[in-house]
Length: 174
Image (cartoon, rainbow, N blue to C red):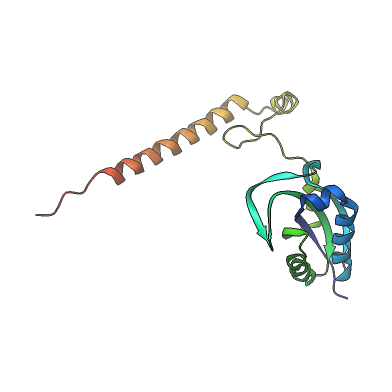
């Protein structure tokens, strides 16, 4: 048997199936993984949501899915197994989508940590406790925020200049 590697997998499954029998979802994923010599280190519903509205409907066979349940997994697999598992998932009508990504062992447990809240520009929002720790370390928080704001303003100005250049008609050569 070849050596195993670590993988993060996200499965999007039929919301009705998952809400009616999540144990069956778990068993199905575990069966697909163990069939190819792998093991499931951890498996859970992503963000503990039973179902989530999809950004767009997914048509599968004669059904149009508007909701799904995301299942996040940490897997240990032989290198050839992810392709086989992805193919099996494509053929299983309970699974809408799947993504399997290689990870280092030290990264695998962090995939289950919640995402930080972000501001309107997508930057993580720091809590007061983090600000206090950074201030104790001598980090200039006001300067860092001002630099980020200045960079964003410069990007916006550059975009505006490009739009103006596109709008100006060129003069014909005489």
